[in-house]
Every structure is written in C-alpha cells, then in structure tokens.
Length: 254
Length: 257
Image 1 (cartoon, rainbow over the protein chains, first blue to last red):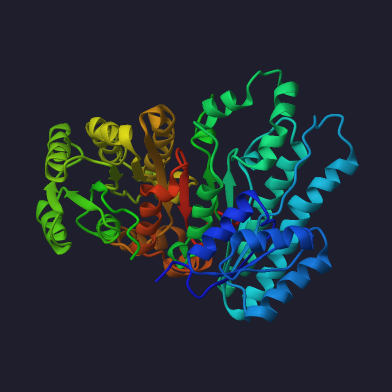
Image 2 (image 1 turned 180 degrees about the vertical axis):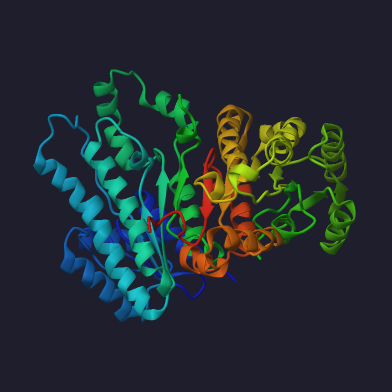
C-alpha cells in the first residue's frame, strides 16, 4: 500500500518547480491530486505534467473568492480534502530599501495572503470532516534577513507564523499544519534571478555562494519527499512545526 | 512497509527498550540490518533476536570509550560497514534547580552529550567510508527540551540543547564526507522515562500531568512516531536535510499559549 493511498490532495502553484514535484510525488504515492496554478493554461500544463488522473482547477491564491472556489471544487469532485499544499509564490528581486509599496504588496499578496487564504479555507473544510494535513512551502528566508528579496522573505516569515497559528486553532479538530523551509532549490525562480543577485551583491558566481552555504542546490524532488512525509499519517505527531532542508546552510554561522 | 532503508547498515544506541527499540524495529522493517546496543546487554540481545536474522545485539555503555569503540567495531564486523548511526541512549534527571546535584549533572552530561560524542567519534571512519560512495547519516536523539526550557529538567534541557548544537557542527564539517547529521526533538512520548517524570512534574507544578499533556500537545506521542521521523532522516528521502532538528510535539512549541 502506497503512503498516501486514499487521500485527496491539492497543490497550488503546481505548474512548475517545487509545486509540480510535490504533485507528481503525491500522485506516485497514491493520492488523488488536484493541481492548481494561476490561470487555465498553466493549470492545464500542470495536469499534463503530473498525469496519473490529476485534475486541475485554476486559482489566483491572492483572490479570496478563487481560493474558496478551489476548495469547494476539490470537495465537489472528491468529497473531501486530506492534504492541502500552499505552494504558490512569486519573487521580485530588488533592494528592499528603495522598493515600492506596490511591489511589496504584489509579492505579499501571493506569498502571504495566498497562504492565509489557502490554509484557512482548506483548514475549515478539514476541521468539518474531522482532520487533514496543511502544508506551507515557506523558505529559509523566513528565518533570517535576506538581501534583495525582503518582501519575499517577510511574506515567508509571515507564512510560517500563520501556519503555526492555524495549527493552534485547528489541532483539536485533528488538523495539522506544518511549514517546510527549503534553502535555494534549483528552480526557474532561482535560475532567472541569479544574475540579479550576482550584480547586486557584487559577486561573480552565485552558484559558488550556494555551494559554500548549502553544498549544492536542493532538488524539487527533495522538497516533495518531505512534503510527502508531512502529508502522510507517519508524521501524525508533527504539528505546528517548521522543517528546514537546506544542505546545512542554517546550521552554520559562516 | 516501504523498503526505504533497504541495504542500510545501522547502529542504534539505547535500543533495549522505549524509543531506541522502536527505532530499531522501524529501521529493520524498512530493510536495514541493525546493530542494537544497550548498557543492558540482555535487553539488547533479546531485542535483536526479536527482529530476526541479520541483526545483532551488543553491550554498550556510552560512558566508556572502550565499550563504545568495541561496539562500533563489532557493528562493522557483523554488518560489513555502517551507513547510519542513531545516537539515542540517554537518561533524565527530574529535579528542581536547587536540588540538582553536581554528581547528577556530570553523570547526565556524560551519557547524553559526551556519549553522543564518543559514539560519533568511534563511528566516523566507517560512516566516512559509506559516505564516500553514497549517503551516510547520523541521527541524534535530542528533545523539545533542547529547544525550550522545561521545569525540573534543567540538566536534561542543557544536555539536549548541546546535542542540537553539536549536531549542527557535525553537519557542516562532515558534509564534504557525504555524512549528514540531524537531530530529532520529541515532546513527551509514551515511555517509561515520561512515566517516571510525571509524578514529579505534578508535585512541583501543582498541575495534573495528564492535563498538561492534553492541553500542550494533545496527547503523548508514540515511540513509533519518533521512529518514523528518525527513519525519514536516516533514509535517502532526506538527502538534502542536514544540520536540522525535526520537532514532533503535537503543536507544543508552535503555540504561544
């Protein structure tokens, strides 16, 4: 019997990167998976990439009505939600000092508002059915100041915190909420912004910095493996936690 | 059971009972061959025998460098190497700060902290050999008491905080050798250790222990749940996770109130 047999899961931001890897892993683990991304075209891309009978519901996670519609849609299709993964996220890479409120809100509306909406609406459904596992894909940037992605990091810190708060409010209903804090993972988001970091930090090779801090870039599949563990009943006592995977970066003062 | 530890050669200290035994059982069920050590040699051998063929029970008092070295040598001889070291052996002292004796303090540190050091040192050559060709891992049993203070557990808290920090430095320094190091931080688990503490906590705090557990962490965790986290951190599933401490506490530390 596979680890997530019989479970119904949805994943936001599932068209690429970590979200796609999570959806693929959950499918391989036997879950019924609903994938979601910001529009129909990207959501269909996710459905194709995941395969295995996955269905799709488009959702802009910064829009309350759309998140409610996603939750309702999953319940309509499959009767329940056992696992919800709040993964959708964006980044604007620029110095925080000198940035604009507009850019700040653009990022936090997805990375923080989106997590708030996803966790609370999916969590309410889980509480009403007697349990479930909420998983937030946060970041190690939640745990320290991070140059050039201040809005991203602040939103991730808020996302970790709201994950813990939702856990305190729903755990008596059998609902667990946990956050995953990956270091820099080899994704499109990181690849496209590498040169911006290099320029602003005055370094020649961002990859070398990552190698020194994290040994190497993480792989989306490695984040997905931890998500699978937290989604499964094997982690039943993991509740309100945040779990770091970063090749050792956070463990070191240097 | 998933064969997530197929082919792994593991050593678990303090494996005669409780969490250590549950970890050994879980690793074996996942396909590992396990050396189970305990200061209670009979318990270690009985536990190993109960797991079936391919496992070995050893005496090991982690306070003795000689015994630790002998146990690691016996492990590599019996299993042909070592991929995973689980430093689980530990004790508790439950006493108010003024009543804690220096003798108790030193004894506890010698087992909970220096014991982890001794086993790690003795296992490193074998782990490095495994790490050179694949994934080698150390999993240290810390505690929520290493993350946050807990009344009556001053010495125990200090020891578990030390284990977490030691784990982090092992992770950083041993990464190049292909060895990962992580810690597990359980809250109150259904074990004899917690049974011993319960009346003392109740007496000193004036609160019913069962009620504390119910409010703070919902219920006691099970030894099997600790074993699952340990197995995750000992397997390829956590290949990019090192220097971390994984808390399992039913929401205890995640809540302010």
